[in-house]
Length: 403
Image (cartoon, rainbow, N blue to C red):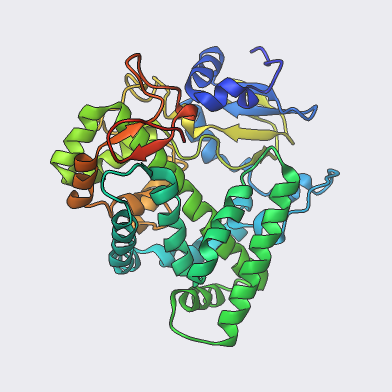
């Protein structure tokens, strides 16, 4: 195994289209030591069987506070962001998970479905016939943030601001901006929770607070859960909608099949999630002891990165993985974590994941796209631009822009 001289995940070509880089890394070795750009190294897992094993290995911890406890850092993240459920191990993670599971039972999601459908209708009704529409800005961003903010009881006037802060939180190139956004979100949600506690009621946030209290979560943990719902709940859905529609635009025969029979949509979602995962690299893990993954020895005390985006395109798991095939059994994809985690998502019908948002698309809504035209700006007779250079638009059926 040869360690790359530079971090391959920071190469501009990776952001334009990550899959050639993933193929090259996986072809060399599905577990590779890579530089992180800070003088240190991490291990990147790109193979599907290796990723499955890593997702469930208790020797890979998600407790970031434990990892950074003895390491100097200039970061200043709000505790609600830095100490959330996704940055913890059992038993703390189990306790948080026990609280969140009832929030997204099939029954609760079913109750919200009419609301989600109304939001989609309202957003699409605002599209002027014959005009060009930015699908990401005018649907993929506002839909999930509106639904999550409804769950949190955030006023409608604050939702655009919250979406902006959440976007800033993922700006890995500017740590000061990330830290500032974390405090804006944490302070805002602390105020929101305090206000709800001071005026008891029967709204969605009050229900969430009762579940948190019954589950034994303290104030900081409750705010942290609210922050997780806001950030993880809407960012992944936004990415999935954009990725899925872009994939369908590039495969018009698949798009046409869904238009003809929208009942095929639920079965197509796993393949769309596999084909272009909304999460390319999973959240931070570190090794708590020496271990061996995919024939590679990983020492204790180093970061380990699992790449679902790479694992989902592993030919060892999926035949002809770079082909979008809506008839494929893609249930083994890792876009929602380990296969067992995906089964949990299916069982609960989680609204925080992208599936519930996509299932609100109805036949008449697909018909609007058919009637008005859908495209990608940057397309010409020679083919489509790279994924990072495309903006999704609908409208006149000509013209075509980048995400």
